[in-house]
Length: 398
Image (cartoon, rainbow, N blue to C red; front, side):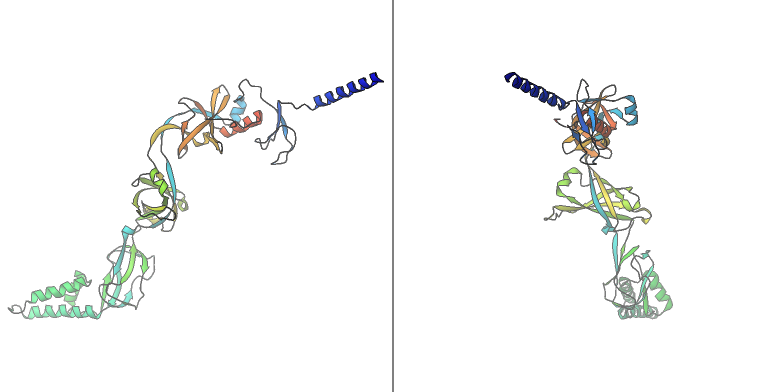
C-alpha cells in the first residue's frame, strides 16, 4: 500500500510539472496591435484602443538592442532620408495676434472757422473718400457776411479816396482781407469777391486734407459753432497692426525691430513692417503691453478691423539646426534618429532650443557631422515599437 501511495504522488508531481511547462510564457514574444503599435502586452488579448485582436511578434535578436535595421525596400517605401547636421543661423521668433487699425499719425479733422448754418453738405456718408481741394460744405454765416461787406466797403473807399493823411485805407483793406483769410476764405474766393463787387450769402469751404471719412458730426441744415468739427479723415496709405505683448516676451525681440505681418483674409500674404510704437504703460492686472507695427497699404487692400499675425524675430546666432520634422517630441523630451551603419538606425535624445520657420535648434545630444534622419522619423519610431515591443524613449537620459 505504501508503494502505491508513493507512485501516486510521483505521478501527480510529474503531471503538474508538465502543465506548468505548457504555460511558460515565451519572453521572446510580445503582443501588439497592427493599427496602434504603441500598444504592447505580454499576453494575447484585444487592443484597448480599437478592440482588434493583438498580434504575436517575436522580439528582435539584433546584437545591439537599441538599433533598428531595415531593408532597402522598407527604406524606400517609408521615404526615409538622412542628412548631415551642420551649423546654421537661427533666432527665436515670437508670433502675436493683432488687429489692423488706423494710423493715428495720418488722421486729420476739418473744423468750421465761423459759426453758421450748413446749407449744403457735399459728402454725407462715412467711408466716402475726399480729395484735398474738394468742395466740403456751404455755410450761411452772419459774421462772415459782415466781414465780406467790410472788405468791399474798404475797397470802395480806397478807390474813392486815393490820398488821405487821416485814414490809411490800405491798412483797413489789408485788415479786412486778413479777417476773411483767417475765417477760411481762399485767395481765389477773395479775388472773386472783389470782381463781383458783392458778397454771396453762402460761402463754400473746401477740404484741406485727403482721406476717408471716419466721423461725420453733422447733417445738412445743422448749425455749427466756431471750431466745431465737420468731418474726421483717415489716410489709409499706411495702417497699424496692433498686438498685445506680455512683459516676459520683451526680451525676445528688439523694440525697434522689423516685423512680418500676415493677413489670413488675404491669403496669408507677408507684409514687411517695423515696430513704430511701444506703449510705456503696462496693464497691471494682465501684465500686457501694446505694440504697433506700421505697414504699407498698397492699393488699399487692407481694411481697419482685419485680423493679423505679427512675426517678430529675435537676435540671430549660430547653432546646430535640423528640420522640425526630424525631431520627435512628447512629454518625455525630444529624440532624433541617426544612421549608424548601412540601413541601421539608432534613436538619440536631444535638447532643442529656438524654433524659426521650418528649422529647430539642437543644443545638445548631437555632434557636427552626425547623419540624422530628416524624413520618415515617425515611421522609424513606429517600426521600432512594432519590432522591439518598447518605446525607444523609455529609459533614455541626456
